[in-house]
Length: 196
Image (cartoon, rainbow, N blue to C red):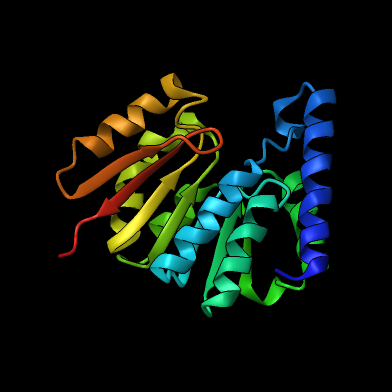
């Protein structure tokens, strides 16, 4: 990883921690992934050569930069979607500083309309870290757009287990998905769609 990107990630970690300690309004909190989660996602992307990556929940772009740096190594691309205009603007400025903008397509708005317009089997890797209450409604489209043999990864599976339960139950009830709960960061739930 280039030194300037290491420095930027460290800066964003500190900003996220400080901001979230001081700010009570959830819409203004960054709620970033942990560093070990970023490292874990990076290894997953590289190991599976997941070139088409979708992130739902950009926040200020911290997690996106982990995904994009891994994508850079394997000639991949990240599409990231964020509902908050405020957070999208922060992320855009951070992407400009990263040197990875050519690898990132940034979308501002709700994920549902974007997913509805996405063809089947479009993504090798989906990282879900947004409004947990919306996950069950997104599941049919997430299921459709992840390619066979590829991964859906959901953050906060341990830290917010009760909120995550409705989605996890839907996925675990689907015989075409194999799942694993990994105790990294706030808990990463992995779901691999079966090969056709």
